[in-house]
Image (cartoon, rainbow, N blue to C red):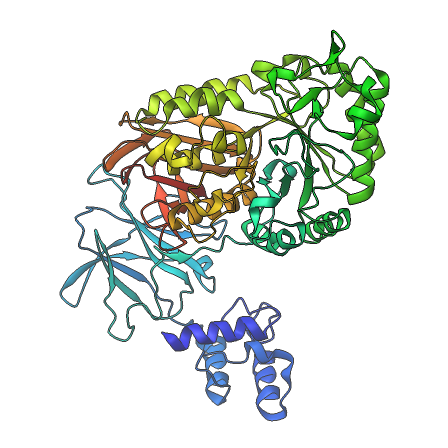
Length: 637
């Protein structure tokens, strides 16, 4: 068996086009004396023209026996024996089929039905006769119960991974927990290898479209122990490995107002000196661009610090009442800017252009745009102006508000994304650490998806950010969601919109990060289950068109009230997501699945220790077993 596989590999390597007829050395579609001549030229004169097809009998050498083999084809029409696959049913399936993946054009699901039962070595085997199309192709072979005898159609077992059928027969015994190779000359695991657990590479993926991007919120002061642009630049390679597309920098300006809030800027054309210099920021952005990432700045248009340079240089830029500058929302460290003054509007626009010029930034996350003090007309004129100014750049404008619920007047002013604030704060937080109802979570998701249809902008989804983590007394993911934090992470990455990661979230960091004091992230506080879940979800988001913003979501029927299952589709790409919200292990039957072969990318039962994938053949109604708070993501092949 090993020799046959090696020969096929050798021929595939050496030949520009393998003979499609046994003995057709010169690949002209016929077997004649010219093939014998081609062989002799190789043997006697080292003519390499047909080297790749000269080993006709596949014995790893080219000798007179290959000439004899060609003569046998010419004179006696002798074709080489082609192997069959025999499967012994030791699992009580009652009937069986064989499916080969991934070659297009081969037998569709549920596969080849057996041609009969033969006895071999005291066992009865189902015999599967393969057509010529199965040979010389590295295929994954999967056994599944045909269902004709038992009525059960959801069992399957991956038998052989990237295997090429040759001349030898394969005898396999299957059971509910695996299979064994019955051929004495084939050590199990060497030639025929299991397909259940293949390594899954999820690092350094890139988004198939701009609608498949992932955004990352970084506080420069917290991101490294040094808290500088220079130190953060070094760690950009980690974000690239993870697959981050957009880095959102929390405010990088000098702070004032007395309580050290990053949202109380003293000068919109300077950087916080503890972070470095404008040149350091420029280098940071340049390095991000080299790595294929974009950088947007946090912009604070509503107010400045009470000791900002404009307070003394341009007091006319501020709103006053009875001759005194106004504190918006009773924030004592800031003063309200006055957008009724055209000079203030132009000054703000000048600052926005400044960072495009000075640091080549790719856009802005705009803070508190729901403020009634900033008219929508400002954004309606400023955003197109910035796009014209940064012509050729993919300028990103993110609004820090839920436009659908809180600021409908901003619906058509040009923002690319808003916060899905109501989905997180109004729904997922309400589900919290104790939620177990799949139907409740489905209702939340359906409401969110329905309200997001037909908008001129996309939504940004998240479980946490700097506000959720630090404000209101401080709350970690564990505080907010408990054991649901893993299933809800899978949900917000796959349900709808662009997912956001807050700095440290990717390693399961469970700190409350005081962004006034730039609390340092403890990168050693690593939750492997969360880390590998997020790594896999980013790769899925990047590689599957079905997980782009705005694609179709179809909720599936389940026989468990604790399970939420849905598919995301785009064209011929389908992703199946299954979430067990219950507190116990659950066996659930899911209906409405598009039948076929799926690769399981994410399995909560194994993700903490290994990143692997496996193939599963699914029927329209299939049964799955998930641990408590378990989750699974599968991609149709």
